[in-house]
Amino acid sequence: MTVDDAPSTGPDLTSWRRAVAAVLAKSQGKAPEEFGELPDDFLVANTLDGLSVRPLYTSEDEVPEQPLPGQFPFTRGTNALRDVHQGWYVTCRFGDGATTAADLNDEILGALQNGAGALWVTVRDDNIAVEELGRVLSGVYLDLAPVILDAGTRTAAAANAVLALLDERGRENEFDRTSVRISLGATPLTSAFAATEGSTAATVDLPEALALAKTAGSRDEQIRAITVDGTVFHDAGAHDVQELGAACAAAVEYVSAMMSDGLTAAQALAQIEFRFGATDDQFHTIAKFRAARQVWARVAEALGAPECGDAPQHAVTSSAMMTQRDPWVNMLRTTVAAFGAGVGGADFVTVLPFDSALPASALDVSASFAQRIARNTQLLLLEEANVGRVVDPAAGSWFVERLTADIANAAWEVFQEIESGGGYLSVVKSGELHTTIARTREERDSQVASRTMKITGINEFPNLAEKPIASDSSDAPHRLPGGRVHRYAEPFESLRDRSDHHLARTGERPQVLLAPLGPLAEHNVRTTFVTNLLAAGGIEAINPGVTNIESIAEQADETNAALIVICGSDKRYADEASAAIEALKADGRTVLLAGSASALSGGALSGGTEPDGFVSGRMDAVQALSDMLEKLGVK
Image (cartoon, rainbow, N blue to C red; front, side, top):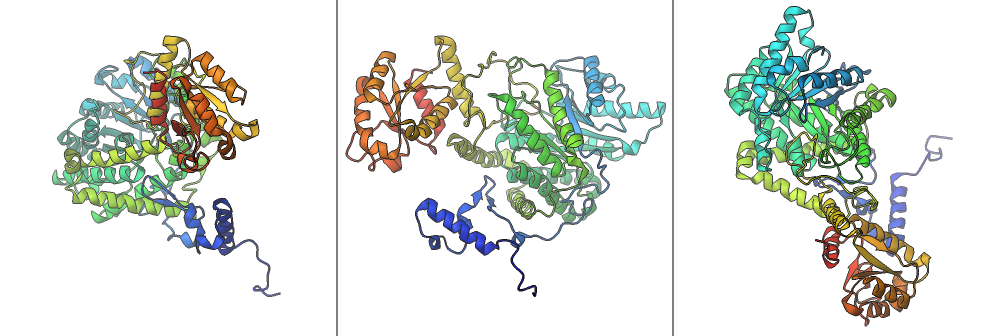
């Protein structure tokens, strides 16, 4: 037997495509040949980034192999010698909310003893004084635990305090200064964008940041003065490509300013680090961090210092994806996000507490518990799942490599558009960047509203029996790292808030009566769908347990039901829907039909009494539920 005569070891791409065409033909009632030579094109998913994700990736999608970690363009990571026993730095945030220096120090030391690897310390007017930073960092080995400052307008003072602390300890003890890693956290340009979002967060101005960069560059330690905080774009609603492109434009603005202030390109590049949001879109997050390094390396190459394009990355699990309702699911979201960021090569990863979107008094758990769960999420990934033991484990995946290249190319286009518009500051001051991101936010809101984008516990599988959020509306959300955050779940959560207020006022949830037609096997799919949809708006579905329209009409009279949803099969609708609608519409009731208006109106309902509306899977559920609440007298 020759090689050519050997039996095939599996189906080839052509066979797979024939199978795809057959399945599509069966589901859509068409002939397989109608789907052409590439039937899988009908299964392509388009992302908010404007990218296409195919159902299958093969060697046809292969891109050139990227250089090893530590080599330009750093797609596979910036450090060829990363400690595989440590992986990335488990970075915990400290100091949000009022506290004392002694209590904060106890919290920091406890976290370090229990697995934290790096410290993200906030210094604000309402927590600790800059002069107390020495007390806060007492007992911390600064050559082992990197420190990231977040001091707002007090950045320069906090930076000087930390540098003085390093000098003091250097006189008292011998330690390797070159092992010390400090981020001074100056964010003037990204804070300027956040200000357009109504954020009160502020930082040092650009001249002060440039002065810090000069000081940091003259030190023996690894100190970076500038943080390009891409999370402000993410929190405003930007998709990943916009976040990377805008962050790159802001970083170029910093580098240009530093070079004008006398630094070389290499010196300026050495003062930049990035912070990006990580979401529960696992593969997109992996590719995003790989692409971000590739894009920045290209900038460094253009500046004549390609070896300096290895800026560190700090990943923070997305504030925008966090929910107030069913907040325990946030643990799953942040686990996937941390996995994606770590596998994608982020140097520092911060997992926000699962209750970070909630007002401080809303959930009966301690801050220490929420922080411990956030920290242990990463420790499980690193210590038990051993995720950090392989550098860039996604390398070679046809899907991830192609997605990385697509994100990098698209982000570069966004960066070029900003540059052609006059540069980062110009598009921020003109409002153009904000407007562009707002359009993305509106598109995402539309996907959430139509439940094309599913959020577990919010627009899918909501828990109507969940305890209402017990807090004063003036009690602001706690432990969030930024300013205004446009959370994806907000539209549905506002509906649930209306329901909670109604419950508190009347003692019961707003209710809608269901009118099932035919046996359980016929109406169960639609009654279940409607029940879950109504729950997403805080509305309780009352299933009478009978299918006799006369009995349902009697129950509607007894309960004074203002809104009824008829549920059944399309075939059953053709025989009974019109009569049921006519019987139930008495006394000014609103009668809706579960099903698609385009599929039923003029078809199964032809010639009969029309319902007042339809309840279907792709409608604007937020608007529909809001209208229902209004009809039920819920303000």
